[in-house]
Amino acid sequence: MSFQYDDQNIFAKILRGEIPNNTVYESEHALAFRDLYPQAPTHVLVIPKGPYVSLDHFTQDASDVEIAGFMRAIGEVCKLEGVSADGFRAISNAGTNGVQEVPHLHVHILGGRPLGRMLAKES
Ligand code: AMP
Image (tube, rainbow, N blue to C red; front, side, top):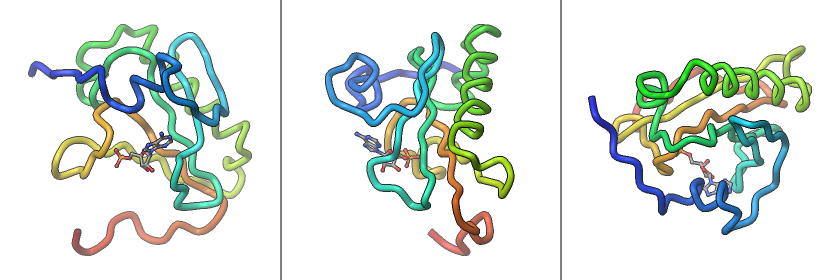
C-alpha cells in the first residue's frame, strides 16, 4: 500500500516550529505535546518526527530505529504524566472509519480518570 503524506497538516507545522505547542517530551524520533482540546485530565499526543500518515503507514515504511524511538517515547510520556499506576488508554485513529482529523500519525495518551468502555455504540 502506498500512503500520501500532506506536509501542510497541522502536526507537520508543529514539527517545523511554525505553530506553537505545549511540549511534554521530545526525543530524536518523537514529539509529545498536550492536546488542544483535552478529553481527560491527561491528554497527550505522541507523534513521530518522520512523515507518516498513520500507524499502518508507519509500521510499513519507518525504520526499526524510528519505530523503537516512537514506542519508547510513548512509555516516557506515561512515566512523565504518572498514568502507569492507575492506567490509561492509547488511541490511534486512522482514516475515514477511524475518524482521523490530522493526517500525521499520533497516539493519544488519555488518563487521570476512569475512561469508560472502549467504543461508543454508534458514531
Ligand atoms: P484525531 O481525531 O485522532 O486525528 O485527533 C486529532 C487531535 O488533535 C484532536 O484531539 C485535536 O484536539 C488535536 N489538535 C488539533 N490541533 C491541535 C494543536 N494545534 N495542538 C494540539 N492538539 C491539536
